[in-house]
View (cartoon, rainbow, N blue to C red):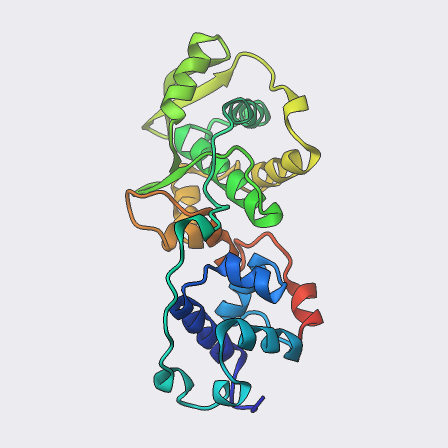
Length: 267
């Protein structure tokens, strides 16, 4: 490839071609035999493409390598978009709420943060959010399966009110109204221990890291931090946040080490 064709430009061109062809990132990643996170990193310009991968991209997206490196490649291409049948679209990021798992994650966080007066509703919501989204970025699987909506004060898990009310009625939680630094605060106290058999070692490890990093933060600090996370930034206010957006994270939010993968694929 010509030296003038930067890693960022390669990613931009592949992303444009993928969209014109009607492929999802997951679809194209499978064809080229790379992971979905790697596909996202390539399109961002954060990961290089070796010559074998570029050959597979050229076959999948129907372009010639000579044309691909030309300056006006995308402007001159007349790519015919192929319709994608709904049944062929892989929607692995659509979460399905695991109610019992969610309850035990909630109880576990509250147990670990029981003595921290700053952990009211706002901080609790963000600890749940980062636990869920960090786990998804690391393992490409859902922890609780909760959906989170982009709201002005940060991501908020959906159906949480109904779950908490059920837990209160079952004497698993107690809701208390108090004040913290002169502001009204809603806190939840665990009335029973979480069932750790419901949590895999990898899940517990991710939650513990989130608690260690963020549980001492104030409500305003953790809300502001969540507002800079790519999944929240790239979402529309009032709508659900797509878990796939975790693969577009950069430091300090990204929890997955792409370094070794990028080194292995340098051209």
